[in-house]
Image: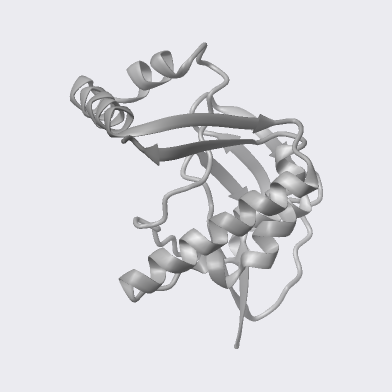
Length: 188
């Protein structure tokens, strides 16, 4: 028996396609059908398929569900890279609707402390970033991640798959994703 490993989120965002096992994807937050396939054909094979990085806000139907023995294993420690913000006018309304008062107060306290201790500059890129700027930012990010995970004596799949991330994020920023940056200098 062979194991096929698939990454749902990467296939969707980098290759702009849905894995062939799904007949329907539904946004569980509003019950909106996001994808539906009339093609119910599935390759009959005796392979195990492991699908990782499947967003928790999606529900799904499989093609020919009777052909599959499904076992779901929640990925508790994997935190996604995306949030839906379309129903919010600003960050305050997002935080108020999504998080409890104590959590919001803690975020504000930490942000105030950060801004008191450092000169903070914010930059946001959406819809346009030059290749030169992107290269500089991503090179710096890779160096920061490498240094941090070396300090921890740990590894991360992001660094292991760096080329794939590097090659896909540029197009996402120029189309449908936002890159938000904090720059800081120690106050003197």
